[in-house]
Length: 79
Picture 1: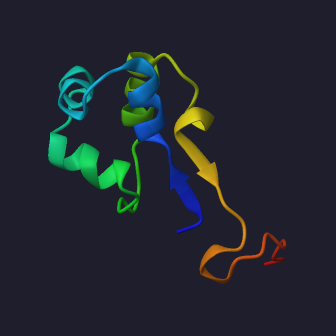
Picture 2: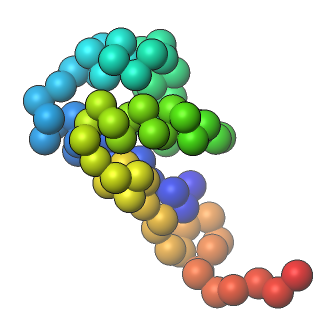
C-alpha cells in the first residue's frame, strides 16, 4: 500500500501502549491494530483527529505516502 502508517513511531515517542491509545481515542484495540498495521481501507477524519489530539501530533506524523509501491510511481494521471 502506498500509504504507510507510523502510529508505532508516535506510540514509542509518547511512551504509550496500544491499549491506552485505543482507550483514549475511543476505538477497540483490534481496530487500532488494523490501522496501525496498514490493513485499513479507510480512516475517518474524526478518528484521525482523535489520534492526533491524544498523541499531540499532526496527521502527517501518522500517515505518509510512499512512491513506487503497488505500481504507482508518483506520475500524475489525467482523467
